[in-house]
Amino acid sequence: MKLEAKQVPWLHDARLQAVFDAIEAAGGEVCVAGGAVRNALMGEPVSDVDLATTLVPEEAMQALAQAHLKAVPTGIAHGTVTAVSDGVGYEITTIRDDIETDGRHAVVRFGTDWKRDALRRDLTINGLYCDRNGNIIDPLGNLDDVAARQVRFIGKAAERIEEDYLRILRFFRFFAQYGAGRPDAEGLKAAAWLKDGLKQVSVERVWMELRKLLAAKDPSRALLWMRTSGVLNLILPESEKWGIDFVSPLVEAEARFGWQEDAVLRLEAIIRPDGAVVRKLAKRLKLSNAERNRLLAWAMAEVPQPPIAEDELKRRIYYGDRQGVVDGLRIATAVAIFRQETADRIEAIAGNAAFAADWPVPRFPVRGKDLVNRGIPEGRDVGRVLKRLEKAWVESGFSLTAEALLSDL
Image 1 (tube, rainbow, N blue to C red):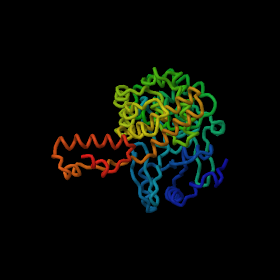
Image 2 (cartoon, rainbow, N blue to C red; image 1 turned 120 degrees about the vertical axis):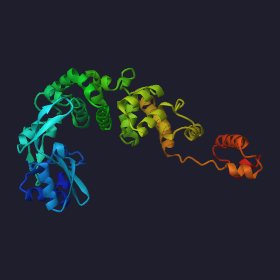
Image 3 (tube, rainbow, N blue to C red; image 1 turned 180 degrees about the vertical axis):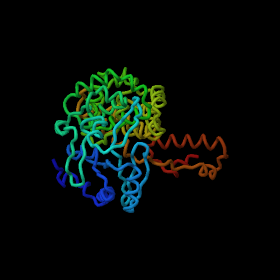
C-alpha cells in the first residue's frame, strides 16, 4: 500500500527529505514511524513527524553533521536524536526492542529488525511505518485496525500494560481520539484488572495523558469506559461523587457555539466546584500554576443562576475573575442542555458566556492623585473615597466620567 501525495504533503517537504538523504547517505534505513503514518491513513491532521532508523544514535548524529544538519542528542540513551532541518525538528529513534521492563522504565537494545521494533510498541495503530515515497511498512499486519479505527494492544494486552502501566491511559486516550464502536474487550479487561499499577506511574505522566484525553474531540465515550473499569475513579477520585454526565452536553455546546475543545473546562465538568476539592486535586496531580489558578477561579466564581442581566454580569466580571465567570457560564450551558431546558434559555446562558468572554473591562477613571488635588488628605481617606466613587461608577453601569464622579466631592 502506498500513501498518495495529497495524503502526505508533509512527506515531500524538502526539509524532511534532506533528513532522509542524510541518513541514507550513511548507509542507514529510515522511515516515518507511528503517529504521522496512522493519522495520514485515517485522514487526521499530522502535527509531528517522527522517524525511525537502523543507524545507532552516534551514527545518526555523524550522518546529520556530515549533511550539515544540526543534530541534538535529546534522548540518546534510549536511541533518540533530533535533526534540525532549516529550523524544523524531527526526532529520529534507532529501531530497538525492550529487553527489560519494570512497569515504568525499559532497558532497550538497538537493532535493525523493523518487526521487532513494531512489537515493542503499545497499540496496533501505532506499529506502522512509511518510507520517503509513502510506501507503507506494516510488519505486524495492523492496517485492518487502522481502517476499522480499532484501538487494541499489540500482542497480549496484559503484557503490554505490565511493561508500562501508563499504557492503560494511552489505551483510553487513543480510543477517545481515534476509536470507533466499543473499546477492545481484551484491552478493557486488562485495564480494569491492572489499574492499580497506575499508582506506580508519576502523577505528571498521568495528568499529561488525562489532559490529552480530555482534549479529544469527544472524550465522553472514553470517560464512560474509564469509569466502568474503575480507572477514572482511581486517577481522579474527585469525579467519583460528581459524575461525567455533563461532558457530552459540553461537547454538544462546543459544537453549537463554536467553542474550542478545552481540557481544563472538561475537567471542570466532572468535579465539584469547591475550592478545597480543587486545591487537593491540583496538589496531587501537580498541576501548573496556571491550571490550578484557573480551576480555583472557576470554583470560587459564585456565578448566580443564569441567564444573568447584563449589568449584573459586568459587575461579576469587574470584581471577579473573567475566566472563572466564563467557565462557570459554559458549564451552566452544558447543564441546561443535559436537563433539556428550552432552546431560548440555553441560548441565553451561552450568550452570557460569549458576553463575558468578549466584554472589554473598563478602567476606573479616577486616581488617588485626583483626590489629593481636590484637597483629600493622603492616606486612608483617599482609599475610602476611591472605594465609594468606584462603587458609584460600577452602579452607573460604568458610565460616569471622572468629572462627574469628582463633582460631588
